[in-house]
Length: 152
Image 1 (cartoon, rainbow, N blue to C red):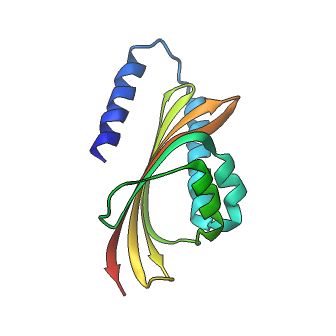
Image 2: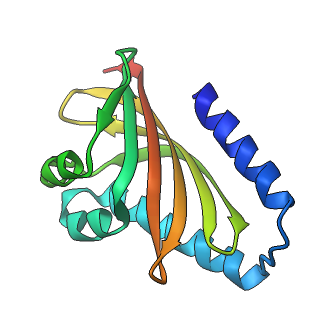
């Protein structure tokens, strides 16, 4: 997670050195795209086409689950796993979206949800870096961390 924050810091500093015009309309558009992605993720496998379309085929994806070592996930593995993605019963969520340049954005979500299949409560922290590719926002990096909050 520390690595993610360093990357975001570098992006913020580099973006401040460029002459970019991030308008309020662009900020709202990016916020809408990022929140729509999160809502589709919460809804689960019924939205696989949308979820997969939102991720760049060359995206760097990593996940740390329940204290295990970090795992790197390929786009193909993400697409293969997506049909098994369960609907989340969210009990708490905090999110932040930040447009860094007109074509680069950062999205952070901390979500606590119930996993009926395991009878526990999980906290998922996701950070995503987005870039406009051929006129469409695509996720180019995803870092996830899952931890148990409590067991039933």
